[in-house]
Length: 424
Figure 1 (tube, helix red, strand yellow):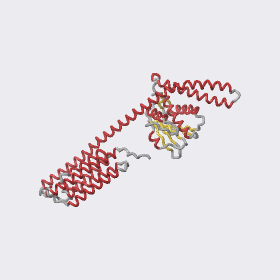
Figure 2 (tube, helix red, strand yellow):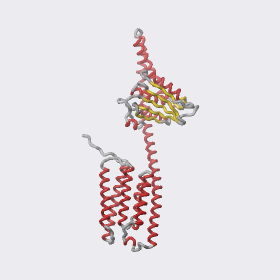
Figure 3 (tube, one colour):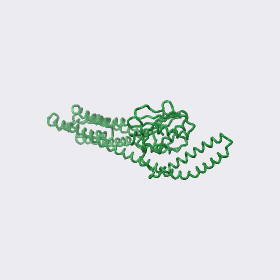
């Protein structure tokens, strides 16, 4: 019987765990301070109301621990609600313990700082504004504690002191929210950039490993292909009285010749000294030629090639590897359903778009999301190497490839490549 493993904590989940721990420690400290103030310093408080607020926050904390045990992702909205609950709890506590004269009033800055460091821009300012509203409300509405005001609740000096604290908090909350958010955002952006760099390096290592293996395999396949070519020539001579068999043998011979030519191109392209810069061609002419060469390999396919009507020519930087990448995508479409494959060429100011639409069963969303990240295949017995190399090749040209389920059925493959200037 399989054992259910806890899901790894995502960043929002970890933040909520930390917030729950901080909340527990903070309110335990508040409870200790209340007990000390009442029993030792003789504070005159509405003890029942204060204890009720503390118990309410304790229940919220227990409910949060239970929710974290459900192993569901925490959204930014849910995290925002937790911080709003903290601000509301602080406001109620300070209302019953002296309002703005409470020495712990600046604790409002804690949820403000947490929000700025962990939440989006709008949510961070919501917490800052809510804290400011709570603090401002406590200036006028609160249960006074004589020991905290020193018996000068009506003095101008004390009022100026409290107003000065309020102004200081307003400035601090604004500065903290702005600068902490900016620093946290910069750190998150840096981490995302490093993550993308690591993923790109890993993909390059995988591509290099596949390329090395492919070069060795190309040499190994040369001998059996030559043997097949000789045998097919002999079979053609022996089948002079069977036209149908000769037709099939001729088809096999063309397929073998194509394989030999492709392997030779692979070996030559592996030699960097023979690899020049990509050539710039008219995308319409290039795509039409590529489709015709592909039809030699897939004579069972029916297709439609459509070209958008725009001014200017869609120039494109191409080489053999890009042709192989597009051929692989065409083969995937033909494997899904060889009938009525629609190929469309379109272009804009900076991009050339090639759409390939088949009428097969469609593509699983999990495969579409993982395209280029690992070896995933759209075929039940496929290894996924073709899609991986196709994605890597198109990325190398500064483009991208995406798979979608067409609303009318089948798969829509979209290839986007940067448009080149004529003669580049």
